[in-house]
Image (cartoon, rainbow, N blue to C red; front, side):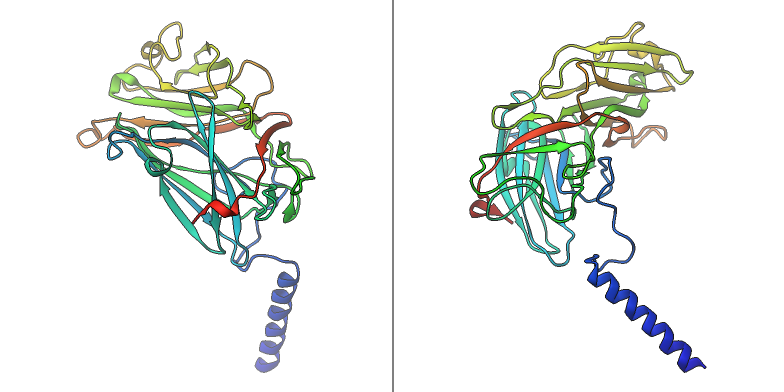
Length: 341
């Protein structure tokens, strides 16, 4: 009886393994994240990775720098990434190609690649021969950031999944000079992007906190210039549910600043809304309509070693609602000749 039961169990296990292999599932245990997940997520793999902040000092990289990490979690397939470095002030882009074999990870410093620039990064999985974007939901990453101001964080890369199965994502071949990435969650597109973002814990500046807010726009044209964040509307709440609205004027493609009495300007001012020993929270969205945004928040408190209630930390902004369909145009050319790995 024991032998028969063991034999039956072994056959069942073998059948399940063969069925999984035939279906092309990963060798890792568990069920893969569904490719049709409609929401960008910093805890899942994707075909596009977004790093919400990178920075380095050309004069003193020891004080301000970023280590960018990219990992290919596929145990069988290699991948080429077209990595775009977006200058947050000018919105201009510079790029490089990164080649990763199966199970390979790589890291590089912003000071070695793009010294003296602050902005954000968009990495797109592409075909090695044509440079066309492809569906390859196996990429994860993060950025270790230290700023001269004292702000530091480990921000996970936002994973944007491609909805179709592995392969070329759109009509694109060796004669194409550009490709359009569509973020809608629909078939033959990428996951939808958020419209409303939130900071869930906004500590008081009167307790020694310095909170850096970063908001990025992912739409537009990387050939002729990515779109700006535009005007931003938001609501600041205290811990008793009182609310004050505010707006930022037209900005570049990256909105960045320390939250204070003037950033944003509220009535009454931020230090009155969130006094000593209190916290608040904030939600923001574009005032220019259906514009998807991503971002991060990093808090620095120099008294963490002497104050039990003081903390320094950072994380990507929470997503509350989705934007409608949006697009990003990227240049297309054969990338593998200049690959770094």
